[in-house]
Length: 265
Image 1 (cartoon, rainbow, N blue to C red):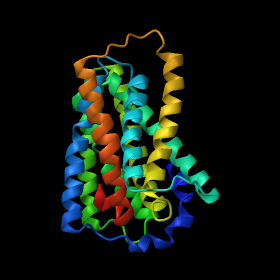
Image 2: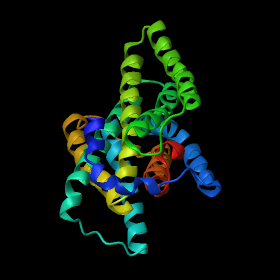
Image 3: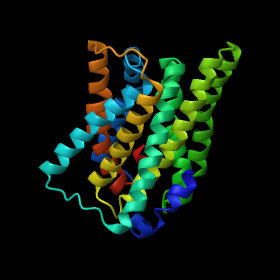
Image 4: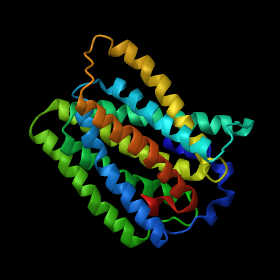
């Protein structure tokens, strides 16, 4: 699935050589975004105490979409979708929805600590996908060695899941690993598509597909689950929705459009 999705972006890749390694200012922004992202699994886990994973997902997407809409309107962007953009935006929306579904459901089955470690592997997968699909973003021997060392942390997490014989933790960790792999692929796809499609269209495609799919799935699978609007849930949604899915995604796609994806993540 990831390779097919990335291949769909090939017609936008004629400008990929314009992307550069991070500048100092861009590096600072990337560091800030990475720091914000590190708190996302913890905030998600807190929100799951009061809402199901699917309901939490669409609520988050709605908040993120509002932020993107405000940004697009404030910067006077056009929402016209050209015929050649429809398929890539659809594929991006599907990838986003599956990836976030794996993440939210996976976090419901495992601990916040495991979620942070496994989800944080997505830059490693970004580097692997970028090596094959982004010109000028190949992995050196040093980076390859560093990546292999980093993967040892993932092995340690799964070893612990086996050792404590907790089936729920193992299922959750596997779903989160799948989410991290798809997130790495999505970063590269966003970078590729961003060479020919406006940033706000990419973000809105993700939100629209995510909101529609998660609402339908939530009505089917979570209709009997309790939903309590607590202070904890509101704070979790503000963090994961406004800060991450809104401002964070805007900053991330801005960087991915201009810089090599493996350096951004």
